[in-house]
Amino acid sequence: MTARIMVADGIATARITLKVRLSAVRYDVAAVASAAQLMQELDAALPDLIILGNFPDGSAIDICGRLSRDPRLADIPVLMLVRPEQRLAALQAGATATLEPDVDDQMLMARIRNILRQSDAPQASRMGMAEAPAGFVHADRPLIVLIADSQTRARRWRQMLSERMPCRFEIRDPDEALGAASAGRTADLYLISADIRERGDGLRLLSELRSRQGSRDAGFVIAIGPDRAELSAIALDLGAGDVMPDALCTAATAEAAAVSLQMLLSRKSKSDQRRAEVQRHMLWAMTDPLTGLYNRRYALPKLADIARDAMLAHQGFAVFAIDLDHFKAVNDCHGHTAGDAVLAEVAQRLRDTIGVDGMTARMGGEEFLAVQGNCPPVRAVRIAEALRLAVQARPVRLPGLSGGGAIRVTASVGVAMVAPADDIWPDQLARVALERADRALLAAKAAGRNQVVCSRAERAA
Image (tube, rainbow, N blue to C red; front, top):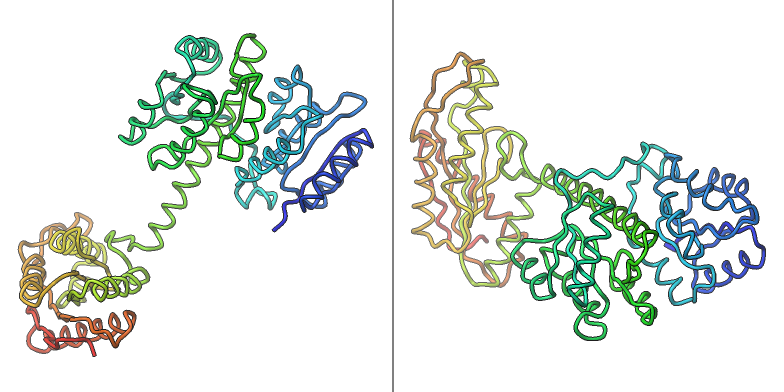
C-alpha cells in the first residue's frame, strides 16, 4: 500500500514543489498551508508521515511540539525541513529527523524510506487508543559502542556524549565489534564512522552487524565527514537509524547528536518490548498453559513436519498416544486443583523421558502425545515402556488446597511405528499414524490399563 504523506509548508512554491517531488515516486501526498489546515486534515485521517517545512511566522517548531504532545498524533513520524542551526530545537520538539530545506532528491527519498521502514507504531495508536508516549526507560544503562576512524575521535565522542547521556560507552575496532556480536556481547546502539580504515568500510561494517543474530536488533548511527555527504543516503538505505556529522566539535552539535541517539534508544526499547510481546503471544498460541507442553493446535502440524522430515531422510518415526488411567477419579475424590497438579507433574515426566529431540504435547484433558523421529521399532518399544514407567515411578504430591498427601498415577500407552513410503503425502502419513496410535491406546485400555500396546504395521497406509 502506498504511504500517505502530509506536507505542511507555509510557502506555496516550496509546498507545491515538494508535493510534485513526492508524487513523482508514487506517494499519496496531501499538502496544507497552515497549522489550522494541518490539524483539520489530521482530524479526518492520519498519515504515515508528516513533513513540516517553513512557516512565515516561524511556528514550525511549535507545531512539531504540539504534535508530539498529542497522544493521538504522537506516533506519527515528523520530518522537519530546517537549517542546521535549528536542528537541535527541532529534535527537542519531537521531530523524528531533520533535513535541510534544499535537500536533494536522493537524500530526501532515502530519509523518507528510512522513517517509513522504522515506523511500526502499534495499531492501537492508529485507532486513537494510545497513551501519551513514555520517556526512555532501560533497566540498566544502555551500552553504546563507538567505532571511529581514530582513537582520538572515539574518545572525543565519548567525552561529548557521556556528559549528555546516562549510558555506558565502549570504544571498539571493527574486529572487536564483530567478535563481541558473534559471542552475544552485543550493544544497544553502534555509532560508526563511515570511513574507518578504508573509504566506506563503516558501511560494510553496518551491513555485517545488521546481518548477525547478536546485533541485528541494535540501533545504528553512521558518522559522516563533511566531504562525504553522498554516503548519507546510502547509510540510511542500508539500515542506519540516523546519520550525523563525525565532528562533535561544539556543544550544539553534541547536544543534537545526544538527542538523536536517545530517540533511537527509545525506539529500540519499544521495538524490543513489542518483539517480546509477539514472542509471548506466539508461545501462548502453541503451548498448553497448565503443563507448558505444546497444545493440539501446534502438535498436529508439527507431526506432519516430522513425517515430512522422515520421508526426506528415509527414516522411520514413532507416535505415542498416552492417557492417564482413571483420571476422573482424581478430580472426583481430590478436586480439580489436585487434578491439575497431577497433569502438570505427569507432563514434566513425559517431557523428560522424550527429551529435546522429540515432541511432547497435551492433546486435551488427560490425553498426551509424544513423537520421536529416527526411531526404529526396538527403540520405540523401549521409549513407550519408559514413558509408562515414568508416570508410575513415584506418587504425585498433591497441593495443600487439596488436602496434601500423594497419589499413585498410571498411564496406558499406544504406539505406532511408521516407515515412510513414497506414495503417501506427509499430512496423510501423520494423520494415519496418529489414528493407529489411538487404536493401540484403546487396546491398552481394554486390556487392563497401565500397559503398552504397539501397532506394528510397517507403514501407515
